[in-house]
Length: 165
Image (cartoon, rainbow, N blue to C red; front, side, top):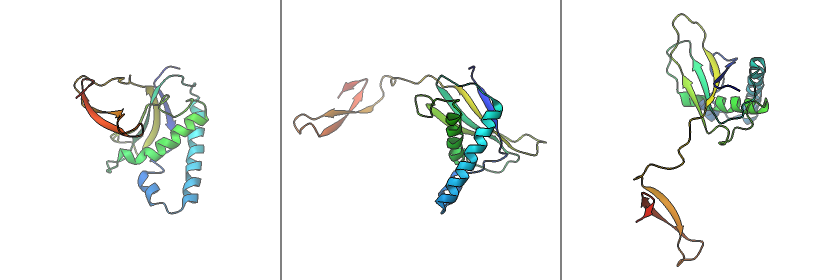
């Protein structure tokens, strides 16, 4: 499949947010809501008819609101999780773990003047190449086993340019 792929979702605004999830005192009602959202997302994916993706992807949940009301992009992460689960259930992605989707994020766009309703879509884009190593000179912890104290005790030393100090 050629990336990027965009799938229009059926919601005009995020139907669930992190704030709602945190305030929910009824776990069964929340589970039913998530199941309903999962079904709606799967219908949208079916309607879009995307081909399965067999490469690492960046998953982006987009939202273009109808107005300039202040919103937090990180509040959409519960919905992003539902959409990723729907992509897996519809076999568009082989999984939603880090080897398939090493990054996922939410993006809120500016509203478009003259457009009354908001819209949401999910984008599958090629994942950027991961850095396998840190640049030289970065100080990072390295865990080593302290042989004198026994094999179960580990100590942390700091390194610069890969050399213990």
